[in-house]
Length: 154
Ligand code: PNS
Image (cartoon, rainbow, N blue to C red; front, side):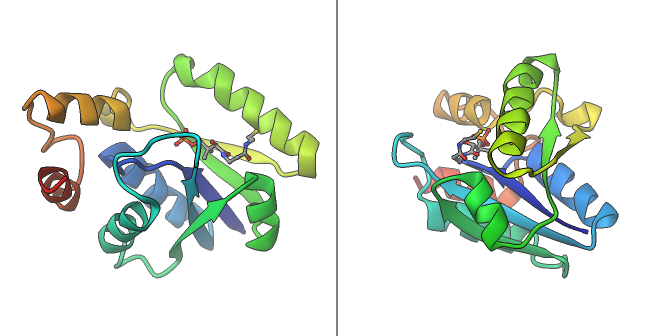
C-alpha cells in the first residue's frame, strides 16, 4: 500500500519525522507531500522545506519527498496513492482533521488513515518551534539538527 502524508512542514519537527518513519514501516511506500500555500506566509519556502525533509529522511528507501500546489486529492490521484495518512496529536487536532478526512473522502473517495503521535512528541508543533526560537529558546529537543541550523540562518 502506498500512502501520502501531506503537510506544511514549516519547519519539519521531530513529531513529523516520527510519524513519517513509523508510516514507512507499515506501508510499502510513503510519499511526503509538502504543500505550497500561496495564502499562508511560510518561514521557509517550499524548496527549503522539501530539501530539509529529503536530507533528514535520505536513508529511508521507501520514502519520497515531493511538493504540491492545489487540492490534496488531485495530488493524491496524480501520485497514485491508495490513501492519505496523517499524524494526530491530541483531541485538539481531531475536529479539523476529521473534517478534512470527510471532505477528502467526499471529494474523491480517498480514505485517511490516522497515526497517533508518540507521547514524547504530542505537544510539538511547527508554530511553537518558530515562536520559541524567535524568543531565543532552545529547540534542540523538538526538531532535527538540520532544522536548528536552518533556523539560525533565516
Ligand atoms: O501541516 P498542515 O498545515 O496541518 O497541513 C494541512 C494540509 C496541507 C493537509 C491541508 O492544508 C491541505 O490539504 N491543503 C491542500 C488544499 C486542499 O486540498 N484543501 C482542502 C482540504 S479538505
